[in-house]
Length: 140
Length: 140
Length: 140
Image (cartoon, rainbow over all chains, first blue to last red; front, side, top):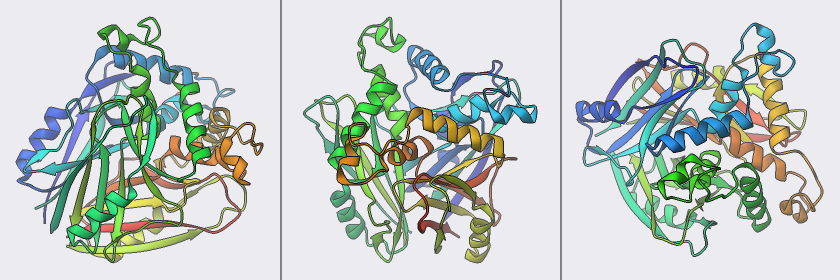
């Protein structure tokens, strides 16, 4: 069994944002030499997500608005108990559960086995600082 | 390491619906000859889900109603920016994030290692056209 | 390829609760002898979750309140069709979809390859009875 481990570092300049990391994952798949296997991509921070969806700015604006309506940013400890710790990012921990921590993608004939519109995104919900994404590839 | 790759094609006649695909996944596990490993099942389209839950029509009606309350269908571009592209399916992209893209299931002694009620479903949120589901099995 | 399969049994004394199972997963990783691979951890019951987030009681209180606002407990069959079956746990099936069924964690140099705050939790939404969690490790 072959394997490859890579850590991406992302620093999103705003509090929230989405970054297409598909080309970076594709490079790792090529470098691994794996023809048939699995590729795990996960946020290593618990106020961020890795998810697969469409690379369309309107949709990303919809996600932003929708997540804010489901789990609004509110630094006050009266709204979120987590913010009693001095943090202001409880909302980010909630948003991340909706969007997910990780994706697992099949590798077939040496490539990410994607449908027509699948792209891998890093979703940041508490940015302005460096954060890591893990890529782990296993297979033959 | 053994591996198997299979693509299911599903065409749900309504806009939304849930289809139990467990028997089809079980056939692939048998065909793969894998005794110990992992089985990834994912929607290849970004307005659909693969998830594990109960095969109970009342629950599926609850999911339908609940998802519609969280992320209602609305073709107007004033509600969803994504629908400015000419699409009317922004809600489907949101619903799919709640229900998830994929499941990873353990294979133990040649079978899906399931709890008592676990069944694998395809969740369609923008149907009436053929869509694909990927099954990838790796192991020994 | 090496593999290890382990089943945890958890009985949460209240209807809902979160249990940090990271030490138990770490023991399995050590016992497996896997240096490079993947570790799947999933709830085997469909009214429970396995997820990764922060071990902070305030955040867990926020999750509890937030999930109850999104998918409130209501045993009446008029609110949830699933409860027509005699069950009272439709809300638990919904909450579990938000929090997820499973996590897949990379194993690197013989250890769970975690970011600074990542911890694995069992999330119970219909407790007071024994339930199982599956740990499946594959790799070399």
